[in-house]
Image 1 (cartoon, rainbow, N blue to C red):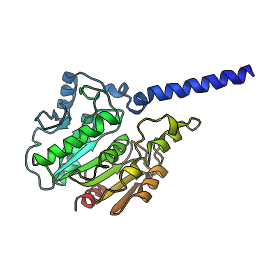
Image 2 (cartoon, rainbow, N blue to C red):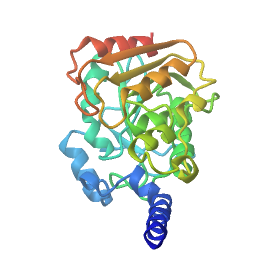
Image 3 (cartoon, rainbow, N blue to C red):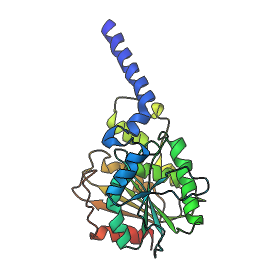
Length: 273
């Protein structure tokens, strides 16, 4: 009985730790030097040809992300707002710049609070309204039409942002997504009641139930972090119009990123016909 009681106490202690530390587990800023000073963020962004977006926009907190210096130059197809994964910073996603630019888009790499030299702490309460205000401001400032692209946890963030159907968003792409954070967390912590522990649910199926624009879901069949079944379940539940792209034999971080590959055309022409 004493051993059983001790095991129960350990189990409950782990549950408490998971509840208290969930933001740190969901947004592990200690990975890849994600938490930095503004000066460090600016220097690392400059290394890949990016600058912090500093143009004042109504309702948008300082340093919402990184762009190319020529961001304001007219483009034929509008702006793609990218929500990145949780283990790096926005400027680490510079691999989006070339494929998007080649197809007529400018790129805005959104930065989470607490990442890449930006102040604050990442959570749904700080990210979602901030990103929604940014989308409205970009559209009003003449940078539209605005499209949204989310990768990994950024796909969950993107879906949560798009829950507001009044936003001027014209299309959405979700790369290596989940269907809900509850299902993703259950995969990693199968013996714990994660549905009761999670504060931010990031239920992408519910968040996109009323989305009226094209959605492209892009999955890796050998995804070891977010199993492909989560993305396939998401796709099955989404409203039309929707498109599925599968990267056969690829993992979560090993999907093909070369700018000339035809899947970029398939995805971007679908969300921005």
